[in-house]
Length: 422
Image 1 (tube, rainbow, N blue to C red):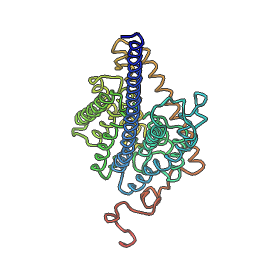
Image 2 (cartoon, rainbow, N blue to C red):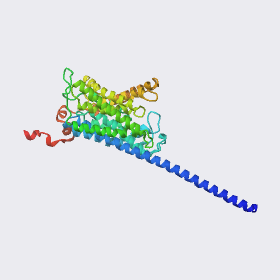
Image 3 (cartoon, rainbow, N blue to C red):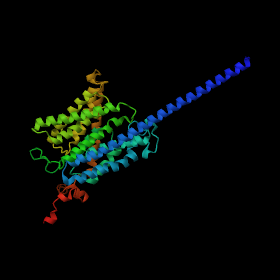
């Protein structure tokens, strides 16, 4: 065989091998590109599903607050919750999201109003629209927390002004913000008529529908599976499974411990305290849900379920009227849960050999959030009270805000028509 023929065959082999290498490499790169695209699609879908779950929490808050308050104010509660999300969505789209996530000076964002910029500073793989809707429902949740603490005596126009401002300027994705703002609102408003006696003792003003309140708690519990696992904004992050477990265990422990303690203290297993115990457990675990183990979640949730009972009693002694226990559930238990991370985090927690560094950091964070949210909330409510008026008249409060603020009755078939009876 001539050398020319051998060279020709060798060249064919080389060219064939080269083409196969190129073809194989292209297939590998195509597979890698497809895998990356699939991961982004999964993360986007998970973020949207989580956002929808958190949105459904608005219904839960509405049911809890309406159920724990009197029938004559149920429509007003629904209106406040509806407007929290409706007006809040528009304001957060216009400025709130940019303030929180736009490029800026480290304190407040200065770009991204009306979602006009790319937000490259966030380094997200998912579309900015998916991240935006998730943050929108979070911001609306923080605003809604305040509604319950200010229920049954708040001027509707004054509340709307608060809702717009807190969504634009104060909201962050922590429960304590809503809880401490609720405390400020309750203090500025003062207690409901008939809540406290001259000797300082408190009178029970029972809510009109425990079934509605219980349904609200179950909805919130369900929504929390979007609230906590959804914060990963990544369906490909398999930590969403253990996060869901710690979330559930803490809620269960909170409900059980609240039931036990209320049974011991009052001689009966208190329904409203048990319901709030579940919420306390959910709030308590939120800060550390990805950082603690299952047993720690049970302990944190159980302690939160106990704390909420004594916290409600404490604020009653101070004559700070909170009809649904929002300050105790979200403010006090939220602060406790944040500090608990410093004790129970598997990496860096004091009880797991991490020293006090993380604990100190968590305490500083709690103090900072308190002064930020309570301070600005107090100033805001005082300003609204001076300019618009924050509290309805005595006559309107006695009559009920459904009629005085909205010209309607939530339960017309069960209301006595005074004019007709005369």
